[in-house]
Amino acid sequence: MDKIRIAIADDHTVLRSGLKAMLNYHPQFEVVGEAANGLETLEMMEKCHPNVLILDLAMPVMGGVECVKEIRHRGILCRILILTMYDDEEYVKEVMRAGADGYILKRSADTELIEGILRVHSGKKFLNENLSEKLMENLLRASDEGPDHQDPYFLLSSREREVIRYLARGYTNGEIGARLSLSPKTIDTYRSRIMDKLKVRRKSELVNYAIKYKLINT
Image 1: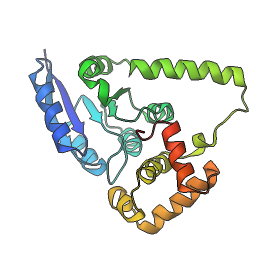
Image 2 (image 1 turned 90 degrees about the vertical axis):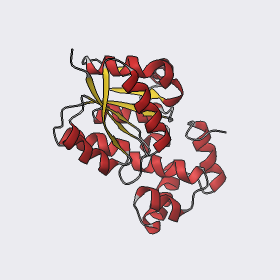
Image 3 (image 1 turned 60 degrees about the vertical axis):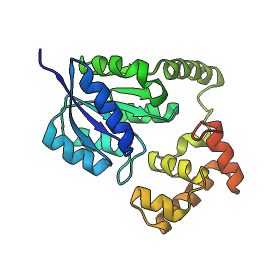
């Protein structure tokens, strides 16, 4: 039986090395490519032709959601399994709509990653168990609250959600811009837009939002 060809895209070298060692040890897997940012991922996909891409969401140059969209736009045939630290149901919805096939939290990778790879490679979807329960609970809650209920957080774009995570952690406009390949002025524009959408005026309120939606650890 041919091995499942796997590519890993994450900007943390140590994590990539650990995943590569673990997956290559599995008799059904072969890691054929690695990338440290979104643009490298696209180039690597064209060269290595993996069956499954393990993709982080918060990468420099091009974020994970944009990367998924571009892979699907280019017609690259590959199953995409998101492996991320972000326990954010709106991110799950957005990235699955963009074309991802599965979503796993890094803290659960030791027990779920192999199952997730096998599941998405077989053509099925895979979602972290805790996130599945949360999505179902919130779906039921939303139906009880009615269609007019909407928190302004859900109005943020995927890029704005990336920026708010860095802002809430205390990164400066210059530091965020360097990680996302944007100018400090552009980050300042994002900051103003985010605060307008969330109807907040102070940094402390922005941090409270990030904690509420588990965008940062308390």
